[in-house]
Length: 595
Image (tube, rainbow, N blue to C red):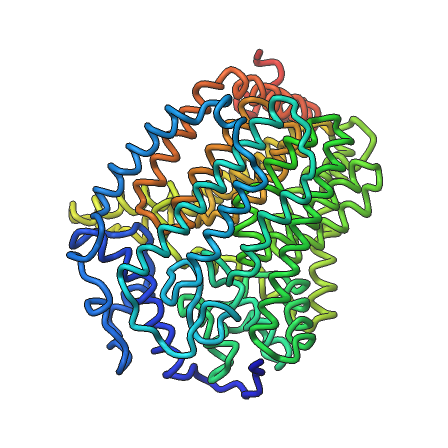
């Protein structure tokens, strides 16, 4: 087992950069070859342009040697047509009665097993193949590749994901019908086991976590620079070059944990990655346990809640298998919410503050819990509780920064994920398109400027929607509304990744009605082909069209809940704002303005 014994240097080692670039080209090659000239997969960042400008490492195959457009199976347009045809055939078969004939345990296990087998292929684009990435399916030297074998291996992954989706729909439909989900943990174990034996799937972020942990052990603050500061290190060689110079946007609790795992692993990069993935796996198990506990407290369908959360493919693939720290954040958040609902409110708020010191989105739950901390129904008392909860959270951030010697540098680094322009994000696509039009009209506003403006507007809308929802909430619906605001935060945030959706999915799964079940099912099934497989942006917008259709069909429920929240918000504002200042409020907010 390889250990990292190197010392950091001021600049990354060029050999490692070339190795990373070559592997990124090999992973992206087959997909690019399947597209017509000039097309794009929809995700743009400066690193792609850099990779295209780098010479290919000597002795390895160029993209043209590995695959050409003539060797590709279909163009992106052909794939889209095939996808739509598959959707039509799927809806002709996938009625509830047919789904109930599926054995969910073994269907899901076979699906996971196929994904595992497909990921073993030497040039699989679904997991890192850089030497030292994982114990299985990674060659010691770059592999020239074989188009036929690569296509067959990718087909196994595609078919495995389809089987996973079918098995998951089966338990959702069954639970929705009142069926008891027996042997839920056996089902979970069989579904997740092949995914954990495989290398980290669909993301290389866990390698960045390991490198940041190594930086902590060497006394390098990850808030001052990226893993490239490690220089010629085995920890740095597996990090995605996109994040090589990126400052860590994670809280001091997580970075201290990563540093501890590096030492526990004896400074072995692969063993560190294994430990980080085990933390994520345990976190998903904890999510499942506490979702069941909260479901019992709320008196809702516990089997449906488990099916929509812990057994959700997004959590299985992007939380557990990929090893994302979102799993730890969400687990701590769910534990804290459970304690709060059990009237251990201070303990609950502290635990959720610890979740936010892993990753900051958990602070959304702090807003709802702080507002309902007091037993008083007076709005002023509730606002006082909200302010105290927020102050307590930042005090915990500060103390953790002092104890870990990492400080508060992660707060300015929260913009790091926004360095990627993802056209699956509505704000990015609309802003980029508008900027492109304005630039071609001769106006001094380019796409990146307009995207920046749209992101600022999105952040403002998140704060506005979050504030209105908190003030309009009741103690009985804080779990659901926290999930709603977390989903809004993802949709209006700077970038959308499928693991971000898991934050809100877990909470919305508790007490889900027809609208929420339909929404979560379509959200999950839309995310799987988009970001899991790197499909074109068109797939994302097909999913958005479906989500809009669901919301429109269930608009009565949606409008009823929105009106309840807004009525609560108006009442809170009417009580909190003195009468002499009411005239300065917009007419639609005043309590005396009528409903």
